[in-house]
Image 1 (tube, rainbow, N blue to C red):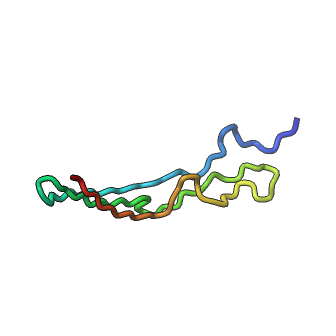
Image 2: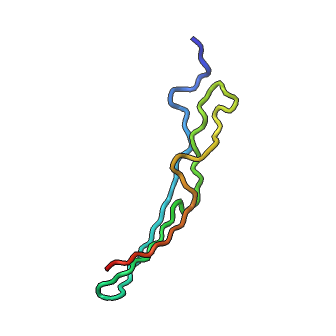
Image 3: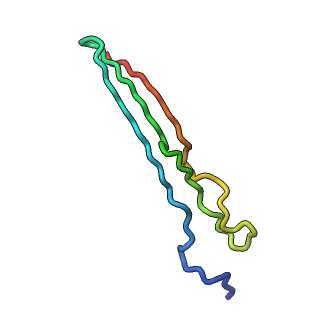
Length: 86
């Protein structure tokens, strides 16, 4: 039986996923029946890059290299909204 090194089982891990979102809502009363809500959302506020897991191929020349972003990660995104309630 051949072995390719002395690394322990399940010791091959990638970088941590770190994400911070922020939201602010402010409601204004226009009349007794109508209200307006201003919304501000910030996704990934600190613009932290979330890298994907390393390539786990042990026989390849690019083994252990990270070539992309983690699934579902986004770069900083700002969003404004206005909602009318009646």
